[in-house]
Amino acid sequence: QVQLGESGGGLVQAGASLRLSCAASGRTFSGKAMGWFRQAPGRKEREIVATITASGGRTYYADSVKGRFTISRDNARYTIYLPMNSLKPEATAIYYCASSVFTGLTMIRTDFTSWGQGTQVTVSS
Image (cartoon, rainbow, N blue to C red; front, top):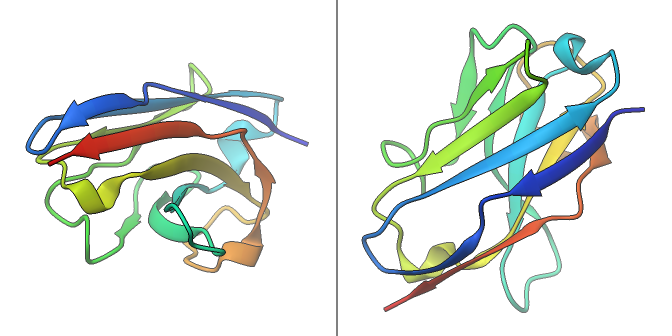
């Protein structure tokens, strides 16, 4: 089981940038696809933001973040990143990183079985 811990959230104004990080423990990190999800206030479901394969060679982005967010990973440091640019108020949410049971690219939330505690991102208008 991979243990995950997010950091980098905060309160920013619209148009600003933040960089989220997720540190993982466990030797299986490099063999698993990873993802970032978010849960907005009042929403029951966590929505997918971006995912990346175990090798880092392929990525997927939700349409709402394409061109502004970039997912990457450093397998030597057991860490994934999510720089977020041009933030909008609708990006306000708790952001979670998660580990998949697969190595390949997936956009299915139930494929992700290990989750961090989340980090709050608040974007004011």
